[in-house]
Length: 112
Length: 114
Image 1 (cartoon, each protein chain N blue to C red):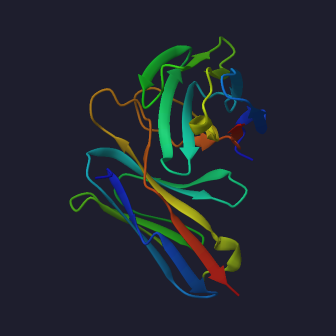
Image 2: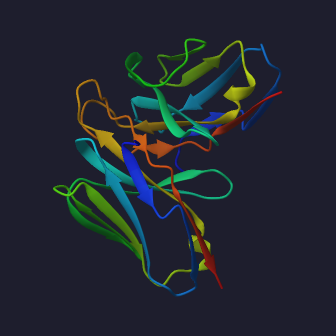
């Protein structure tokens, strides 16, 4: 079983729709990260959070530490949001030095 | 632009060969992480260096090695290459240390082994 699970694997939306991507993890963590990978391959860090909620523009990330669950929301989706969204965690077990454990990603396609 | 640079962008080589991938972290960052992204395994942590010292190892094969130099750039050496080593290799940098910091990813090196 993967330590970080994402759902859905693939998501197609119409422009303007509200989108939610979910992430569950099974290890103790120091932080959870949401990353965006564009078709060209580059990876951009969207959020790093350890509690509560963060907002940046049309993106909102929430985390529930007790339930070991995080969600990434995109409001008023746009075709330029089409990308793979990856959930990753920084585990807090001994020997961890900040390295990330990744989910398999959610491929989002937003149609105009 | 994350401020992290990686060279080369693309590398095509044959099985059995040896290659070196290079990463320069953001100015001021002391930590460099190496990750491998393959179609079947997804993104996996390989190795972490902090200020020249190896700090943690992940799923790194014995054929692979890395180092971080005094100017903080890092190199990942892959030897006796196999077809299965074909992947995107990313480095990421952060301020570093034991606390958790945001990581900034380089553009990656796409390695194709034929």
